[in-house]
Length: 514
Ligand code: GAP
Image 1 (cartoon, rainbow, N blue to C red):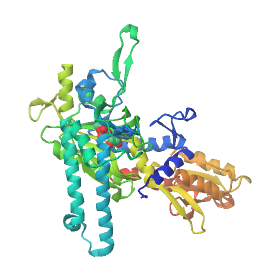
Image 2 (image 1 turned 180 degrees about the vertical axis):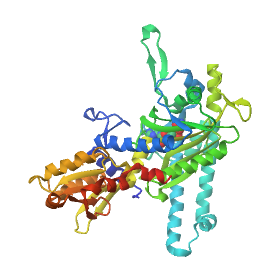
Image 3 (image 1 turned 60 degrees about the horizontal axis):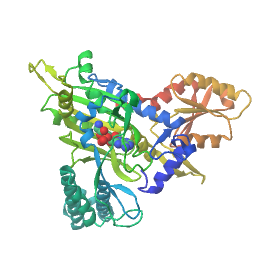
Image 4 (image 1 turned 90 degrees about the vertical axis):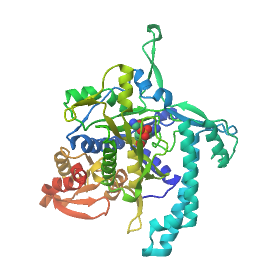
């Protein structure tokens, strides 16, 4: 992967727009901050990511089923879940620049600087010691690394405690002690830290009818919790079992930037796994292992993932970790894995007056199950794939290309069928091949411009294979098939095309690795 810089994110944003992956929302009116529209290629990639997730989570697991709950929910849902009272971000304004920031993010950026210092020391030492380098020992003993690590621990502990206690004055004090300046103006003239609720609200019904304040859901999870009993009973599910869902969520983020990393309207793919109380930590570890395997099967580079355990637990969790990905902005949260205890189901029992329990025939008693949750942002997953796939290359003949090395199974199109020239029956033959392949694969047809230019267009949208129909095709029913990544071209019979494409592009290949 990729350089760790703003420039790469800018290039990806530009490429995504130029090649129909992502457009700023309502762009003809100059766009709307932190809202984006997926274009003709973006929607294909997004759908393929969803399918990979849904198949891995639902179809491959006998004890997991899916639902699709409404975005609008009874307002008491959000009182019970704790979101009305506790779904806040601490914000701070700079009095000179009038810019608003998340106070905890400003502090975490200082931590990231110390982490970068450690990474630099490790790189230097690796070069110095070569094959003899023992990273674990170096991290434990090098005085520079230890100094940075002590500082990280000190800052994180202080921030964690202050957030937990809601001690906003101490968060401001920490910002001042660390000498944090506004990244835009350099000013250190800060307001006090305030809490800001992230839920969007609107009214249900007209005012005359007595409108009711309702919220746009900030997570899909609550749609699963309130349906726990419906699914358990109608599906005759036995503990342990899971309910999965893909859907939109909305958060009024204070700082929404970095392209589709932090949006105000985004999509989540969540799964709640209901387990026997006391067994939650075993299942927590189990889901951590399963989810990291799902990520790594994509081949985006093992070194681009790491776990980051939470020190500051959300109001519902007794353990939580992030799967972080090495985005162009550095390692950031891609997915959350949380042990949510029985917090949600118990709270819904209390607020609704309905029992949400499971009768365990082995134990001969009823209990409120504990929950392990896996929650991944679809848009962040999209950005992770775009970041790891974006490649600029100089070819042997000195020409340059930009190629999206998207995992073949997720690529918007699997194959482009290209007649070498626009005459002598070649386009008709190409269309004949296309009409057969499109039952199994999303295909493109292109006959405009020189063949090299057409290859570049397919490289730019990540099509793994180009099939070229030439004069030999008319004689012997063979075509050339060009590989996007290594640029090799082989000649194969048209009859073999489907099996060749299936072997390289089917989701089955990814799912079998899990
Ligand atoms: N139900 C648990 C939950 O919502 P979370 O850590 O707040 O947990 C889960 O969110 C995932 O949703 C994150 O790991 C991230 O990928 C995605 N996500 C959260 N806020 C987002 C935002 N503003 N824009 C894009 N994705 C977001």
